[in-house]
Length: 274
Length: 262
Image (cartoon, rainbow over all chains, first blue to last red; front, side, top):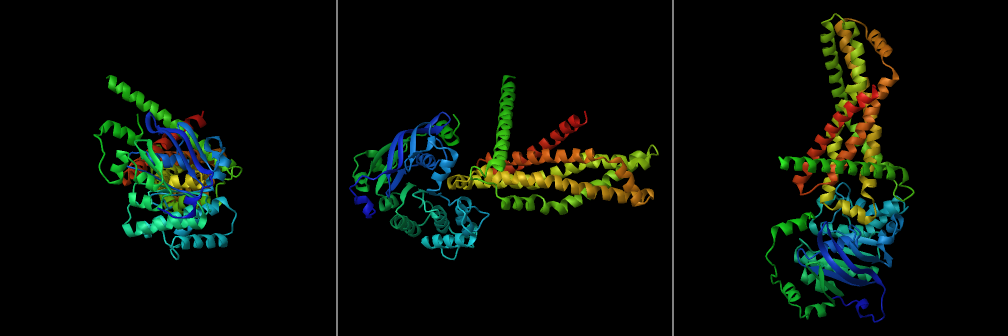
């Protein structure tokens, strides 16, 4: 668990992310049911759950790639559904997203990837953008890799480069999608350290979606456990670890709780076709 | 029987849905092109130039080769068919009108659909699969403005330009062949051709090329954005995009030709 000062602060902090009564799905298939969630400013919130729990859908909603069917979502005090395109654009500049596979633009070099948000949203000159890209590459320990193409990077380096792009606008909220997925334990641990370091250095609110139990307990101030589209528990790592909920204990102890799958229902869930 | 009716109905609805999506995509592309700056999402000139290089400049050699072949082919067929009536001296009429009004825009359209339309569909579908389109939206960049609008603008500039180039090359190639075959001077052949052609013939071909430009980009973008699966899905949408855009070009050509000559 993180031991940074934010976790011990007793004064109430504003909610950077606030979800109220959120329901979502694809077509007639419901994926998320009546979620209530708050992520405080400066906090690291880890959203955990097994496959099909709805955590990826929740992340897509949080970063504005999907719209909720019911309920409200507020980011940094702004209810997203009420924002016009320009206001939404202003809000997006305060958010950063590091996707699972990096999602770097394959036709651009690493440095060009990092400079893209600056090029699109600021009027900085080329030299300043170069400096900022170099600085962000230093933060993620990728100095000197700016001229490489994404295809030339390893999995861990791709994720680091994606983080550099996500933080180039100095966002106030940073979202991570499965940062440790597909990485060996050493690279994964280094990424966890990087996430903690980012919060410490830039005082960001960080939301991490993962199914990696070890990583979650290492970085989280609080953990949200999602199961079959519903929140089972929200609490500190200790609270979650000591939870009496059997499904949570099964998940933490990697015991299978799989129920017999209805193939047709599973296919509908995958394709979004009712 | 009922199953076939059901299938036909479903396909008709799907087709109508596609037409609706295509119209919406075209509207959105034009919106970002003309009003993007006001919404702080301008279409970048640099991106348009990059697309113009890929769509137009890089296609000049193959366009030149095909236009030469089409010009000579038309000359050969015209001389043969008119020779049956002893009217070979009128070959320039059929060659010049069919090249400028029909063959040049059609061949360039089909060539660019296969070359650049497929590349655009592959690019958008690969980006969708790799979450790059999601990343664009997360960064605050509208994907239509970033990916489709520059390609549409570049296509609208380069397809008519390539068509003009194809006109010039094909007419010259046909002229060289006819003048050599009939033993007349190239200057005399050119003068006869110029006396037949009116600006409306050239504009007819250019009008078609503008229509084809829109069709190629919208069909490619629409197919690219509907990708499912991995690498296989990219291959599938790329092939589908080429087939759809060539079909759309040929059908649009027929309708345009009919309406413009009424």
